Image (cartoon, protein in one colour):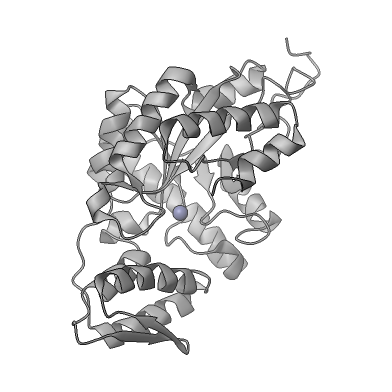
Length: 333
Ligand SMILES: [Zn+2]
């Protein structure tokens, strides 16, 4: 029971063992034949993971998890599902499976995708894939990238995306223009959820959170640009959904690399209730800063290893078992 003099977000359990939960961080889920990036999860593998979560874990909505954490009543096996960015597979593949298994999830959306139908990284992928066959090599920032076959092009998409990602937005746009000057202007498809689909997902009980407008690395932008990216994405989503947006996820999401305490303060001041990074660990909203909650994604494709790693992660974090944390985090990749 909460003592009367305790602040609202302080956990009633001194050990904090019923105040933390695992937050899974997904990005893209697509049929295996459309793979161009090893970070993409196959639809069948994702479904098996949902089956495991349904069977062995207690999947909570973000609201439920935060409320239970504040009351010190989080079940030991609690898990919250989050999906970042908002690509079309959120609606095409992830949402139908969540509905089939009646599981809630939170989707963090970069709002430029809603407005133009794709994000900057889709431009890179389409430019490289659609380049004329006679273009066998691409050059960017004095580096060469092979484009003489399907595999080479897929590898170059990943390498060029990684290269361009760590630039401020203005330079990022310039580098994409440099790439397109070599490949020709790509034909763009709709590769993002639409506002209507997002409304439908929210109406079906999914939580929608913000993930900036353009998906920049906040640490590389000016304070004012970062503040606008955070606040505008919230405002755009609230206008579409006609309801408040309470949660935020930092693009890329590594503290001290991709964002800093300055951005944590901006997120808090923008009126969010909680925010998520990609640093691994349990979310401990009553003990840690609520605007820098940790997430974790077991990477195993085998459903049993997936469950085992998630269970061991929860045990390791709950009882602060250092060697187990290391084993969960560093082995098997
Ligand atoms: Zn993202």
